[in-house]
Every structure is written in structure tokens, then in C-alpha cells.
Length: 142
Image (cartoon, rainbow, N blue to C red; front, side, top):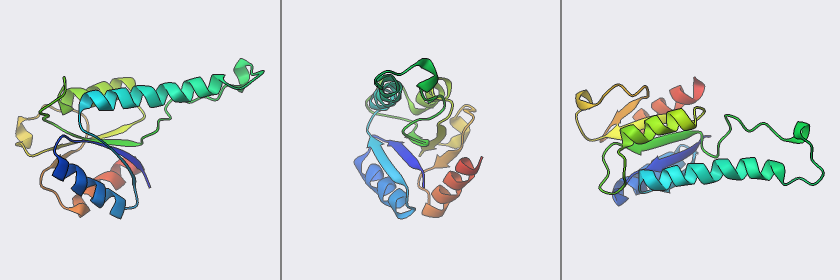
């Protein structure tokens, strides 16, 4: 089971993705914009670091090493958004740089040939649940 964040602005797609991922026994978080997703990642990462300093009488050796550990294992992001300051490609590149331990997938209804090489799998919409399962299984096994 993976903890998966879906970043998608279309309600129907969000609901379908959530249902498919839960059918595959994954824990699912859903956000509508890349801005919300970056804020979520920042808050959850800071919460882990802050919680390690809240232990009374702790010294530096007692502080857990959370480097590379996040509240999500995988982000599946749409490419084009009606709202948000950055598109899915720029968002996933930002995630790669700031949170290198989080796996990434881009999904799009556009022609895949129009996309730059972004170093992560691309799911073309529409896709079947088996396509989603195979993509996730391969990423999580890597």
C-alpha cells in the first residue's frame, strides 16, 4: 500500500482516481491545485521536523533522521490546470528538487509527444485501472 497524493482540478477525475486507488488498497489524498499541493508538502515536511524537536530533554543524537521520509510516497498530477500558478510539469520538477524521495507520475489528456522529458512516467487519459496499477507497482518497486 502506498500513500498517494492526487493533484487534479476536475472533480470527476478526482473521484474516479480516488475510487480506483482505494480499490487497489492505497491511502489517497486529493488536492485541486499545484499551489495547494506545495503547501501540503511543506506543512507535512515541517511537521515531521518540528515534532522531532519537541521531545523534552532531547539532545541532537536523539533527533530522528527524517531525510527522505514524507507523508506521501507518490504524487500523481495532472499537466494542465485551470487554477494554480504552475502547471503539472513545473510542479513535479519542483517536487523532484525539494522532495527527492517522493515518486512522481504525470497524467494528461494532451498528446504525450507535446511534453518535455520530465523524468517520470506519463499516464495518458483516459487510462484503465490496470495501467494505473502497473505504473504504481513499477515505481514503488524501484
